[in-house]
Length: 429
Ligand code: SF4
Image (cartoon, rainbow, N blue to C red):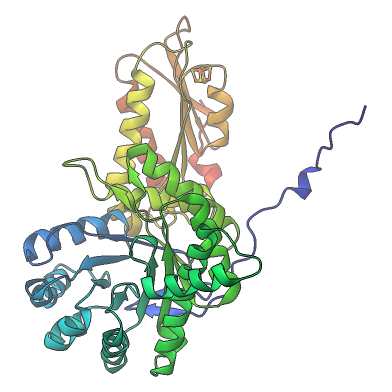
């Protein structure tokens, strides 16, 4: 009988080299050309409501969104854009704003020049920029305004609003072909062509490649992967990745992570957006958190200290460990905006919160600081490990608060002004 082949460890591949793209500056943020993969998000407020939109952009920026897109769907929204920019600037928020235009973008950008000026990028959907004879005029008009204002554009094809004339043409050609492909493959080709033909037209109109970003969003994971692989193979435009209509809760997070994770591993993608449907009354910043966690868990960027926690099992029936893991995680995320400047490098920190002695000490030793809480039947003591060595044992009802205080002390000593070397931080019990 043949033995199954076991690959030696060093044959397990890491991420592919990044797909080489042309760098685009969106305001002060570099996208593509080897720049770190950028996290972006989109508001769901009425853009005409300046206060609500400013508040949400500020919340998204505070959560770590490096660019924020706002819809510009009508005159009141276009009129509000410069006021939104001003209000953000007054609060010291420099996050570039991207205008999302459909159907009447050419008109709004022409009639509201202050809006065209305040935005750092315009998003154009080639499937609904106009129809028949008007298409080229309206598309050209947006590109001319972008050229005049030195603004980049994202040409974003979308499966749900795909250019129907192009799709019909490709379907007819396919039907007449000796080896026709299935309709889905033809639709995928139409997505890619829609983005590439529009980008070529923008270049004909004088827009340099350094101001063009492409996307081709689909809601089905396998189609999305195929479309983006094709787009990357056929061009070197900077690429915006996103699964459209990802959905709500765990479904949206899993679908987006699966699709984007595969493409990022293949080196494809310069900026990402996770399109989550928020729960009613839910927090819009979740999409930023998911994007950051995806990039960080895959090793592309670091944003916040990671909290490793065991899943819990029958060996730990108390809720202390879940509560502590949640409390530490929330505490870190809340403090990060201030810590970024106060504690440079703190995003590299690893914290472990473990439920019992089985994996607790081992996992805690791999973290910068970790705690192994007592499982059912264990002595009511929680050893804390710092940089791989046992540091202290916590006991009693204040274990959670005491551990949080130790985490803060560790961060201050390791990353604060006058930080000590790791060995000096550790003072074993
Ligand atoms: S560390 Fe202990 S409590 Fe946590 S999953 Fe493993 S055995 Fe269960």
